Amino acid sequence: MTDTTVRIDGDMLRLPGGVAVRFMRTLRLPEQGTHDLPPGLGVFPVRRVSDHAGTVPAEWLARGGVMLPMYLREAMWLSFASSSEPAALQVGAGKVCAVSGRPWSDRLSRDPQNYVALPRQPWLDGINSGSGTVRQFVAVPLGLGATVEGQVTGEEVWGGVQLQSFPLEERRRAEWLEAERSRRIPLTQDLIGGVFGSLPPAAPMAGAAPRPGGAPRARAVAAMGLGVGGSMRQEVYRDERPLAHYTTEPAARVFVHLVTPPEWRRITGEEPPPSPADRAAYTRAGLPWFDYYDDDAQDVAPSDALGAVRPVGEWLGDDLDPWEPPAPGQVQHLKDTPGSPVQDGDW
Image 1 (cartoon, rainbow, N blue to C red):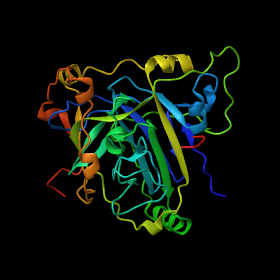
Image 2 (cartoon, rainbow, N blue to C red):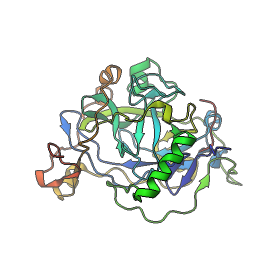
Image 3 (cartoon, rainbow, N blue to C red):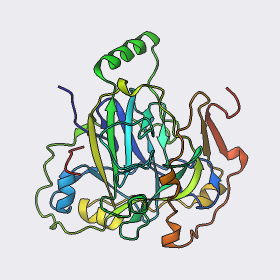
């Protein structure tokens, strides 16, 4: 029987088929101009919803999944660099596909492509809204109409982030494993964010008991979703594998709830991460920004629907944080140089 369990491994999600996802804290980009890739400033903590049954809303328990804390207008990117096998991973912002701009689906599509191809795609920083660029994922409350979901569908119902994995079908996976053994290719390593060290044993999403004793009663929580911020140079790579190489149905899916820091503290009893780093101070300190280019890969065409999504500043006001562009020597080129060769529920 195929294992469909999503597990938390440290603060990383592991989905069947060798898919690994880390949610990375980062610097928020200005909403004007196109920028290099911002750094990873550590991982967001991830907790099972089912572990906090006494303090989360009933609808969260019905959806299952995990939660993580984000500040208003904080940015994130998704790291897939620890994924160990070829797989197709769908990424949704409020059940709008972050690659195609189409409604969420339990089927893979090639025209338009509605997933990222792993491990070729090492990370995803935002929605596929421009040729060779994405617009940064930024946290925003539901109810303003500023989320990707609100702008594309006209409604804000779901919020959060949705993930769904399609591994290689059994015969293709056996062929790939044999080829890997013969070539002895090492597993892909994180290129941004460094080495995270050893991780504790993976804990299953299903079957976790709520914390006993003394927990406050569950109440409504201010829901959050993903809007967009600044634009950056990043390609969403076109998959070279036929769709027939993947399973026809998802092996697993997980709903990721976004929680404000005060609610995180109330629900979990844990302190949220400190507020995001000052980007001007980061740049003045000479710390690195990044540029990633894969000479052998082709970019997925931008989505018209996602291209029309406006940055959250149009709802929340101007971005007042000072911006200091990185000096040329601060931009580290990764891979090729351009120009040269969790418990599920109802959702």
